Image (cartoon, rainbow, N blue to C red):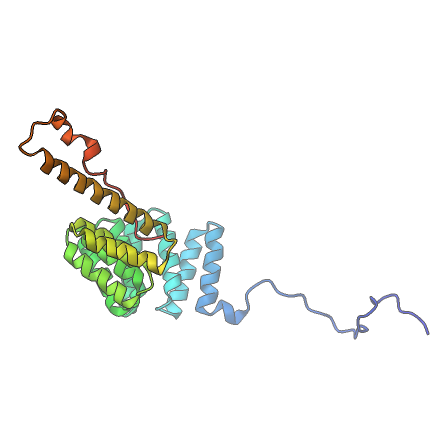
Length: 258
């Protein structure tokens, strides 16, 4: 029996039909789909062909007005080109086409926060949380905006609602704790941090805030005890009772996010 040297061992004999090479381009059907246009938009973004990327994302959104990830990518491209007003205008036009999309209102709130338009940001985030009650990001951002506007009670209510909808997420407890601290409710703040640590024992922000709260509370109690002790009594070190070492600890900045 002869041996064929034209075919690798173990492979079937050639039939004479040509094997077509695998195409690296998206299929025609994929190119016409919203995901296909969005995928090409991401490719053009990587290639820094931003004008083409914008057109591709627009085409994706024409085919699916609720395509949130395409809208987010489009807004990101426009903002990266330092045109936030254009990004907001484009987003508002899309909201008019898809008025029930909570992700669009959340994105609108973020853009308005960047523009320091707190009033309209609060309205957008309120709408986002109404459309999607499970949107923790919307509720947390809403609470932070309300705090920035001085509406601590509203912010606390938003945090409580967030905990009700997402009882296992530690960020709501941490933000609620900072709000209770701002209201001077030390015990409520401590309870919120402890609940955060119960949900996630290794969460560093909650542990840090709780430790700081306990130190701060101890400093306040020490100062109060010394003040009562020195009232009406001659004390050679009385001028030191206002020393920084006996006062409040410096304020810290705390983020509720990871």
